[in-house]
Image 1: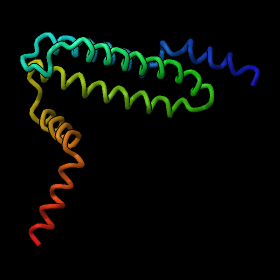
Image 2 (image 1 turned 60 degrees about the vertical axis):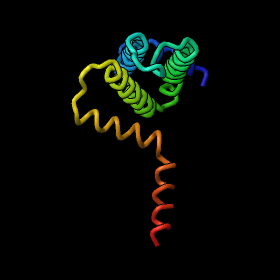
Image 3 (image 1 turned 180 degrees about the horizontal axis):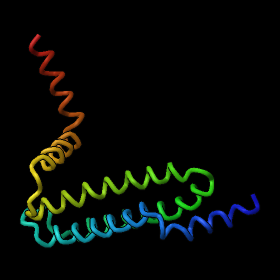
Image 4 (image 1 turned 180 degrees about the vertical axis):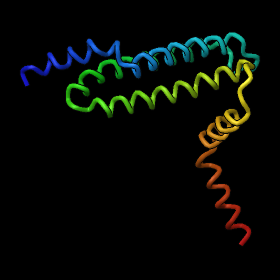
Length: 143
């Protein structure tokens, strides 16, 4: 246990060479840039620049970065390297979805198969539990 901090420092030193960390970092940067660009070109009021929304987003991004970059070397030193890779890959996927949504809201053409899946995911997220309840209520009314 006395050499644990050397192991953590070793993983901290090798983080720059870890592909998933590099991809994660660029995904966060791209999400921030596309989010700012989306707010600048938005035509709908709810997508336009709102400083409190932007500040909340930057704080959220900062917290995620801080958590990932702090936990990665510690968890890796404890033998959870593969689990951290999976967690960071999950964050990369979430950021990629956000980037694609931002691009779509800016008017960048998105392939229809991808757009339909993202729209379906968004609809499920927005109306998930309410829709299921309504269907259940309708089924009971028909009986």
